[in-house]
Image 1 (cartoon, rainbow, N blue to C red):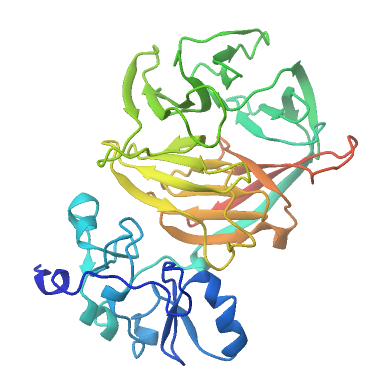
Image 2 (image 1 turned 135 degrees about the vertical axis):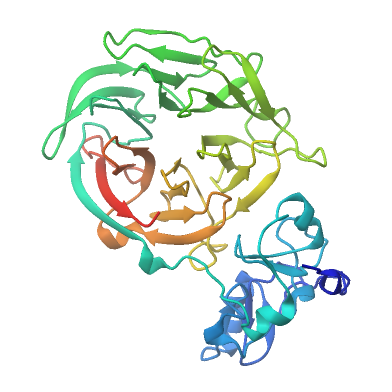
Length: 418
């Protein structure tokens, strides 16, 4: 298909029409024909247009709202802020600029502005109704917080409370956890190996816990002089490690890297800079990957726990950057991701403890939907793990300032559609 006419349109993107901040356009008011950012939608426009019809720009052009239009060139590209959008990628469900086409979206289903606005094509974002999530079991633990969890092949679990520096190996009983082994140690990440032992991120290195004896030894995965920050073991035995230079976490003064090693500790790949030699990460809080090798990273941005999700191709290209959902993440409630995992269908799941949210993304980091887990009684979801039987475990944390007698909950959930 030829997209020359779309690409040649004006390349000077405009910002929000209601403020002078040049903020990214996310919404269009059909009533007063205004393009606006998140802040103005929930602020100045709410006061003057309470009954106005507002649409997310990615929803404009669908058949059911085909009378509503949007001019692509008036929208800034998510990935290249100085470029105007020129096409809609139906594969990724987002507006893109000409730079995006060759780098990421080559071969995707690309839609021109005229067809998009006339609804001549069938747009196909996944609908929330296709996705189901329900609580199967609830366990009360002996911990105040469950910051990290790992499921062993025999169904037992390791879980850690970083606030109290407690690491436990537990059995799951009917409504509670029974402690097998308890260790006093602080960790910053945890993953099960294929030999059913547990790799943990300690203050300066990666160590191995023998699940039979509870003995902790140094592992073969050495990232010195860097300090590990997160860990994941893939289905093909590779080990993915987030790492950083020493010193303060923020602002960034040294290296921020994701390293891939084989099971013998030999380095296979290192991700640090993009194609423009700009750092990919600020602080790799947690990491996982899809079955196709896409690297998925929760990237912490500051001491206030703001963050984003960065998804890279195996070659290191940025496939997507997720900064939260505009319906629930605002300036007052910023996106604060913590736990991350991928499902067998290669969707990405992200927890947000502060806002009680579970975000479901595509394998390239685009939003599919989100759940407010408070609606089903789950508060402050933090850690994530998949069970061998195909359920999801969510470990929760206690409210700040809770007494030592407060016990964290572990939820097991059935899910489908993602």
